[in-house]
Image 1 (cartoon, chains in turn purple, cyan):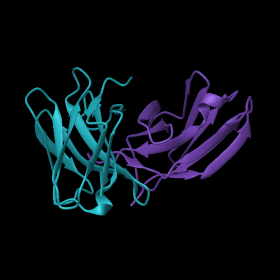
Image 2 (cartoon, rainbow over the protein chains, first blue to last red):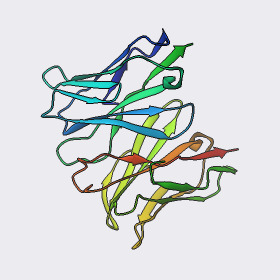
Image 3 (cartoon, rainbow over the protein chains, first blue to last red):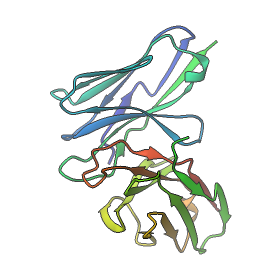
Image 4 (cartoon, each protein chain N blue to C red):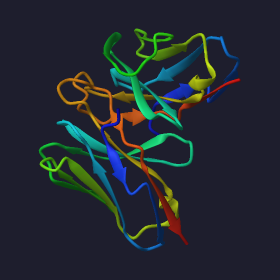
Length: 112
Length: 115
């Protein structure tokens, strides 16, 4: 079963606009990670936020985590055509389970 | 470039066959993870090795097995292949790894096609 569920499934915006993706999960976690995948290629790690953190920034990326609501959001500011990709949230199992559980992803399209 | 390498990039084989996928983790990483990505199942965790020992199992079929060698590279063996095994197989590695609380870095994947 999938732990993370991204919302929306697909998002199309104009270049320069901000893109926000959300992720919900079901069980307790140690950390939550966001990954990007360009069409059938490898997963690129974007950012990791730990369960005791509420917000984290990395360049044009801003991630929030609300453990009380079991949700996270990824904000990409000033989007570029190169940001077109699928974005996945992934949670570790917590309780010692190590493999990441991925959501189905948000497919982001940046229109030039 | 994540530093994780996987070979081969593409593999085409027939049903009933056996294949071996290879992964070299980032230098110094002790944990290796295997994942499968398919259209219907999405990304699924298969198995983790830590410093040569099996650490955790996910949705790995009995027809699949893995091992991690003393030099820390890992191999995923898939046998009695079925059409439904066609997928992208990713390897990831992490540093402290034993508790899975570190960033996992993914390789470029091996695309397996079973005909």
